[in-house]
Image (cartoon, rainbow, N blue to C red; front, top):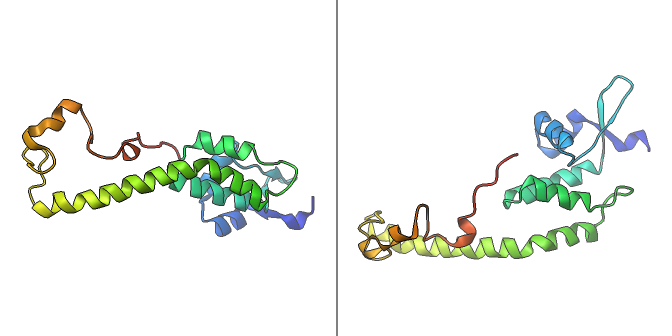
Length: 156
């Protein structure tokens, strides 16, 4: 491997926007890899920047680290991923993203009516929850679209 293809952790931090701690964490989790110099300093292949951009994009739409790792494991180890490699990976998440967009649109459009009335009370709201009927559905935000009721994603 050409040493000009290798970047220091500082260069990766500057180019990716991820802090040092995140890079070390992602390395421990197997999302990225580094080689070591004779002085035990990390060196990353330039292609790590693309993997980190993918991690950022996936995490921003709520994809958990386990699923991100599985997706990255499907990439070729012997070459820099191509545009078609990335398209194949992102295609599997398109349905989920469309579902989230639809749910957020419904939430946005539904908020106009509730906030517009000024009561802000689900127990006395005659518009959305007359007679507090939603209490029978159990704890949590049951009137939110299902895609917005998923448990929060933990991790980095």
